[in-house]
Structure formats: structure tokens, C-alpha cells
Image (cartoon, rainbow, N blue to C red):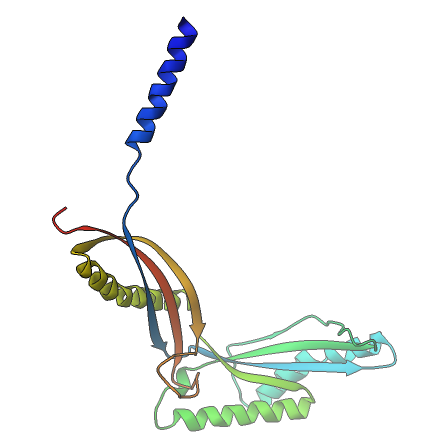
Length: 226
């Protein structure tokens, strides 16, 4: 008798739970896209030095001299980078006795912000770095513009994208005699740098980088008057 009472109680509890379940929220989904522009904080040049020799010891000795030679060359050219970092030697998978190092040379963009003199001074820096690479017999990659706080820029672009997604949601809610009540969910679909959709200009440039974020937003809505 006790077992039947327990089973009946469990069944009643299950039914009550099912009845008390929250009704699914009515939602609207829209897409927003936001682009922000920021000046670059730094510019980087990568220099890659590779050596081939009869034995690995000689190849490694050659590339290990590259870091000191690079720093000496920059000093002789009166270049004052923020940072010069050189990787440890690596062995390219070419089948020969090769060794390779890469160096990142980073400069502040502060001195290139003047609209009158900045571009010319920056062009002179590029010439100096190309000449340095030629003298040291290495490959060069750059200029590569960067910002110090990428997450903050991407967050600002996402906030703008979210702002632009709202009007469409409100228009859809109006069609249903309803109103948007809350943001239910946000998915960041993409964060792209220097791919602004509304320009044909070459990006980045010495004055700006762009960050474009696309978001998919789900809004909760309810009938007007609820």
C-alpha cells in the first residue's frame, strides 16, 4: 500500500513539474555589423635570415651572428625601435643543411602621426629597413601595423554592431504588434581587421586600421501591453 502511495506521489510531482514548465520565449533574430577605425600604435618589420652550409654547425653559427649584426646596423642608421626580438635557430624541412632565424623589429607610430611630415618620415623608415635587409642579405616582411589592445577595439566594434541590430528587431516586433523586451543571446560571427565593407581604399594605412565585427542577435519579445 505504501509503495502505491509513493509511486502515485511521484507521478503527481512529475505532472506538476511538466505543467509548471516555463513557456518558450518568443524571439526575433537579426544581424548587425559595426566598423571602428583606430590609429595604429606600432609598426613591425620581420627579417628572415637563412644560411646553408656543408655542416649544420656552420649554418647555425651564421644565423646566430644575425641578431647582433642587425642591432649594430640599426644603431648605425640611428633607428630607435621599441623592440628587437630574434627567434632561436630553426631547421627548415628542405633536406639540406639549412638554418633560419627571424627577427621582429617594432617601432612606435607616434612620430608618424603628423599629416604633413608623417607619411614622408614613414617612407624613409621603410627605405631604411629595406636597405638594412639588403645589406644583411635577408628577406623582409612588412610594414605590419598593429594596435596594443586588440580586444578593446573588437569589443567597441561588437557594441556598435549590437546597436545597429536593434532597429531591425524593433521593426519586426512592430509588424507583430509586439515589443522587444530583452537581448536573449548574442553570437559574434566574425571579427575582421582591415576589411571595412564600405570602402575601396587600401587598408591598413599609416593613419588607420579598421575592425569590423558581425553579430547575430536573438531578442526576446512580447505582445504589446503584456
